[in-house]
Image 1: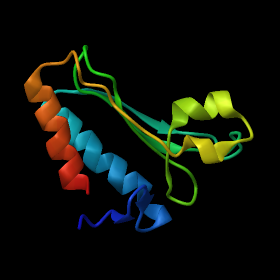
Image 2 (image 1 turned 45 degrees about the vertical axis):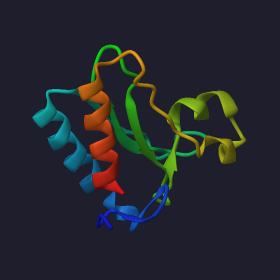
Image 3 (image 1 turned 120 degrees about the vertical axis):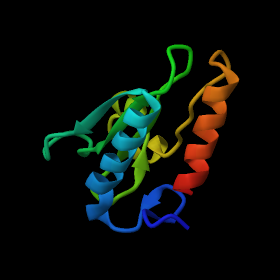
Image 4 (image 1 turned 30 degrees about the vertical axis):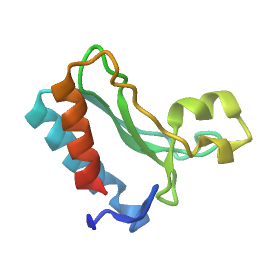
Length: 115
């Protein structure tokens, strides 16, 4: 098991978000993928998130890794539409249908590594 994860959708410790994002930033740079690091203001509503958005290919949806203050993986894009119903923001996905197969394979390898 990767040192970051205790179970699906949650970091081992809440203070690991920065370290996790730094590792993903290194991976994105190595793969020549575009990325943006996100670090919300502590007063953000419904809660602040910290994470990274990685764009592996122009024809793939981004990989989004956003964590709430408790270290739970959240879907930051859904949070803007759901307002006070953050329980519906647990589900994440990335569509790679139109990207080259090597991009899909690289994403699967990354997911297995993180698992």
